[in-house]
Length: 529
Image 1 (tube, rainbow, N blue to C red):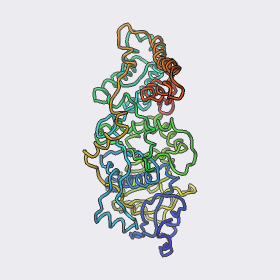
Image 2 (cartoon, rainbow, N blue to C red):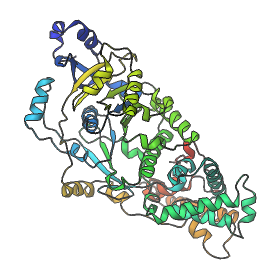
Image 3 (cartoon, one colour):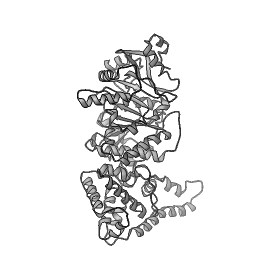
Image 4 (cartoon, rainbow, N blue to C red):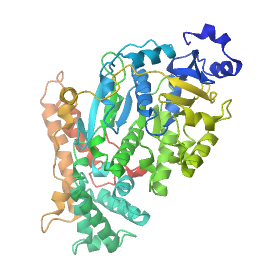
């Protein structure tokens, strides 16, 4: 219950009706205080029920209107209630969530306006960097796990080329050729277009030599741009995003993207891979008391720009179904029109910051945004262009799943540092993480590239048989050793299976005993452990 509920009877009637829509009885996040006729009414608190955070949402608004601080505010409260959070840090200023905020006149004034008991607080955080470029634990994916649809988006292939890339992945899966990094995929395509591989190419329906050549050139150019670091082993296990700290608070996972801002196709697609990978691995939980994870997808418009129909269909299906696995997804962008209608229809919670209407296109976007809101007591066209920094129009899902009234809101101030932490402090936090040693050193073990490189190499079927023996050998050795171990000690089998090397091997090889790897949405490979 909001602390000032007793005084709510003094509110103007329209404001009282809006406030009653946010009077939730269960656990909720406090967003701020209601604005009515330009006046902040701290007795009318605007909130969002905790269980509804997995019904997805949208945070939108023009540059400089306070979207990042809104993410920080929501992430803090989720962490405090034991919910892990993922944040994409595009500008490099979200790392401050790990440090207590600085009390100043501005913060004190905002806290007083909205009846917030502001206490400087830092929150448990892990810092990641895509491919290890930047300050953070490296995040990589194997090519086989990334899948053909996502990789086609990164390579900016057309629909025909995307389908052909899918056939190449299918071939590699069937033959047991491990696609761990880009040179592995390049080696397979080069083999298929070579004199030795032409017979194999003929057996892959619908894949022409010309199209394979285009894909090979795209891969070569992509590597030449320095993109190879993002693919390989050890592959990041997205289960790391679901952790809580020792004090029970949810871990805030911050992925720094400032160093790769010039590669929007890459980082936006990588974010989608993280989400798709979570979708594959997590069990169904139905309607939980609180989410397992809330995932903030910043600069969402980059994900949808130039996307194929297959790609958009996969996004829509992922967003629709991942809710039942306890994951909430918030897309962060400038206007709702940046998000396709089918995806927008899945988003139950809205925080809309100010929009600009300087040009005819801006005015058109403003009118379109207004139409996406429920009927309101406000003049939304006027309101949305007059909101100040740290103010937003809010509508969320109530505890019963119904939309709440539209509420102009003066948002609370984050309690953590509103800005980046010092680089030295950030580096120290990264190096002291228990995950640092697990992911920092890249591994380049034998895979498709090494198998196909030597002249006179065996054919793919023979290589598949050899790889099957390689995968089985450690288990056979472990079984023999286990028979000689006392029963009260952990067996060698348990040690081998539990080791990071074995898990990485199994995850990347999939069914390397010659059977095809099972793929799902986006063509990504399912995990085996």
